[in-house]
Image 1: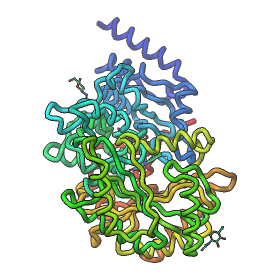
Image 2: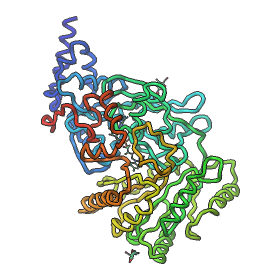
Image 3: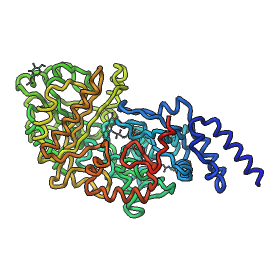
Image 4: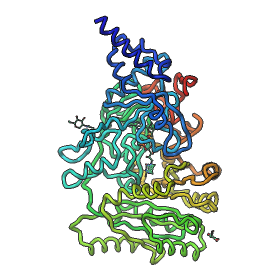
Length: 541
Ligand SMILES: Cc1cc2nc3c(=O)[nH]c(=O)nc-3n(C[C@H](O)[C@H](O)[C@H](O)COP(=O)(O)OP(=O)(O)OC[C@H]3O[C@@H](n4cnc5c(N)ncnc54)[C@H](O)[C@@H]3O)c2cc1C
Ligand SMILES: *[C@@H]1O[C@H](CO)[C@@H](O)[C@H](O)[C@H]1NC(C)=O
Ligand SMILES: *[C@@H]1O[C@H](CO)[C@@H](O)[C@H](O)[C@H]1NC(C)=O
């Protein structure tokens, strides 16, 4: 027995010697006495080689970089619990950042000098998504691993019961269940069903204490609501139970153009006020096209043809507006709905709208083609070499009562002469579809509607990043000065004061939940909300 233990100790020690940056950080003696095999198993899934650590040291934003000491490749949630326990057994715990696909913009999934957990490895290599996507026998929900991409959840649920699907989608599907649920998960279906976090029934979470907990509104409810929108601060989501609906087969996908913000927002708000039974869209978003985007941008569009873009440009010129808008709607239907029936429904909806006459653009696509539209944009941008560029994205929730003021100050003010470098999204959502118990922050609730405004811009030329960052700062400053109570979505704040203001009345709860579920503040340090209890910063590379 003693000999076996000694052998394990030697194995651990020799393994550690191959770990160059990490060895002097870990105090293995602490982990060994009770749990030596366990520690060995954890260590065997850590890698410190250059390729692993470099891959985990940047993200989609390409703005910040930070090298972890190691990358962890778990094959089960238990492995993640083991890693966290190993960290907590250290005199100075190391930080642990789950990384979905690193589609964050500002280093939120990085762990400077700590350990990044490559969530992908939970899915394994087997077919059938490694048993990480299961539909319930009554077909009302799907259990998906936190590491799963939404596109894979879609593929798996479509195969079941004549085609099932989650109800709310982000615009882009190559992001993970755990990553979006840690933020909120918004898209054109959220006006009706709320964000993705309003459609979750249960979670498995490995808390920052190393405990593996199942939680729901009835069980460990405080952890459930903390983790939803929790920016990775309380635990690692390893499974989410997500509500399903019957998937439609096809989608009538339309864009209506407007030359003024007032009628654009009025129509959007009219349509999101219609609930299931009334004629309306199943998805509503919208975009702002700055004049220069149209006249100079000319980026390939996956929706508009060249001649349609010409018409939109003419519209901007004729109306002398520095921005035009288009509302985007999608109407779901099935194979047995006749084209005439679908046309008639669309005509009924259009009658009530006040877009510029003759400026409705209609497409007809399969449900999957519709949901995966940004996947096609990605392919185009990749082949043009403008995908892996800096993305200083700014996403804001803007109160409905101030949205025209925001439009005037931002699109016709701060960004008036902004160069075309990516889409600007703008669409309203109904507040009552949000659950205030979750951690995600929305604007003050004197409005029953708020807008999501996404400045999704890319830095493609020298100097762009600095200029875009200045413009972002000017937008935030404008909101501050004008007293528009904007809240950042996918938030980034430089100081804890900034975070306190961000969370507002939720801050007390956020702090209390942190003390309870991640008392050493080891999780998702890249968010910069809580300083790690004992950061091993001078050991970092
Ligand atoms: C092209 C594009 C389009 C997008 N469109 C939308 C959109 O329409 N709507 C929308 O809401 N968002 C959208 N996003 C933003 C997206 O939700 C975020 O990037 C989000 O972070 C998910 O990315 P990820 O899965 O790679 O997570 P990561 O960036 O890897 O992680 C995000 C944060 O969550 C933590 N985390 C990751 N996994 C877990 C887990 N399992 N448990 C706990 N914490 C975890 C990380 O530590 C990090 O702090 C878009 C992003 C891109 C790049
Ligand atoms: C799916 O079901 C299998 C078999 O019951 C189980 O082992 C696995 O953990 C489940 N996966 C998820 C993500 O719940
Ligand atoms: C729109 O852009 C064109 C070309 O850059 C410019 O000539 C025109 O003045 C702009 N119009 C407005 C209203 O800003």
